[in-house]
Length: 60
Image 1 (cartoon, rainbow, N blue to C red):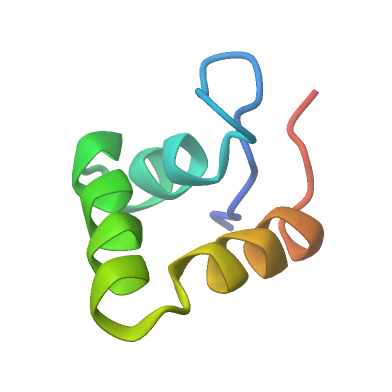
Image 2 (cartoon, rainbow, N blue to C red):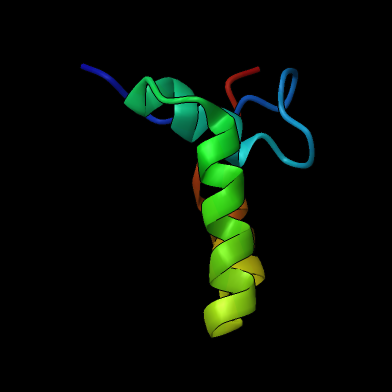
């Protein structure tokens, strides 16, 4: 069974985008751009990122 983990070793801030990129087999830069777009468009990008940081367990 495949699970989502934060990759704080290879991540930039908290490893959320790195972990999501690994899970979906997509470049983490795409997730970083999505979080930035949500921040500027809706103002909730940082809030969503922080919640994901708290909910998604760290791999290491």
